[in-house]
Length: 249
Ligand code: PEP
Image 1 (cartoon, rainbow, N blue to C red):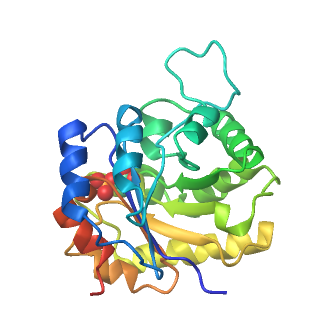
Image 2: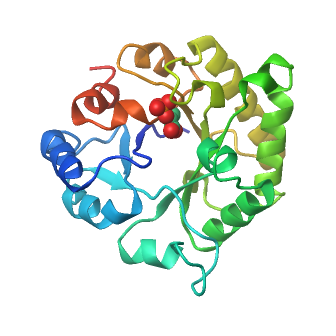
């Protein structure tokens, strides 16, 4: 099976109305008709509708950075999957390092989100990664095992294309220090074997994230088990994001 290539932008708490319009204006129709890779953009909630309208017919998928795993109700400040469906969004990030480490999301909350998204037929980009201290203590693979096991809890029921993993070492996110191609490949290979053994998902799409930039993207993308990238800083402007989308052109 050929694994789908994905280049995804995580805008985090950046890009407002003017920047969103400028981004899509500059990207134009460059992604229209692309069939060897998928381009995804995740704006923050207030700009989802604007981005969805601007992306329409341009070969760019709009995804959400977060959601709350309940149908609706008294959850002030939260956004439901039904609301995302209403906007035409069906892809969500779960487990991003900033949600785990800055917002304090627990393994249990993440497990609930993964289960809820699967139940509602959403596609998930599930983020995992170790801190520098964990890597230095040699806990690297144990941390990844734990994040994968607790999230799926023996319950990975969605169609193959609806679960994408993003390996994002915490020490590489927003630091300018990326994992080398060899470091990322070692972990992607490990994740692929883990997902095959535990869940029979050898062909799961695995993205790398962490300071991907135009000058390091090629080394990473040429690795056999790296299927694409999840990108923060270098995705905010169309000029640098385009270089990542078309890294091989
Ligand atoms: C991210 O937030 O997922 C990310 C990888 O950020 P950056 O590319 O800025 O390191």
